Length: 124
Image (cartoon, rainbow, N blue to C red):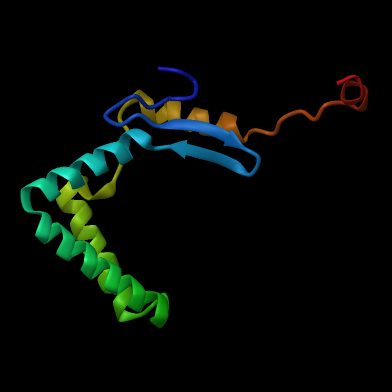
């Protein structure tokens, strides 16, 4: 485990400070999702393609109709159903002591940083 990656399993999560907050590196989880999509495509590509095309159509309707439209709710349900089938609903589990390490890593990443003094800034 590194300070940058406080969560090592079942999916690694990295934490990087950014000027506005943090960036969570969810590459390991997203890789599992892509592999699940690839497996689903290999098993029944046409069904997966049909599901994705239906989601795309609902998304176009949702963008046109607005956030609280029927199409938005249908799209969200279709996406959730696909995530349920592929990768445990899209939730990233964090267990035991890793919860505290993640919380501490997030806290450290957003902690105020000392500003360099004028003297240090001039020397650099």
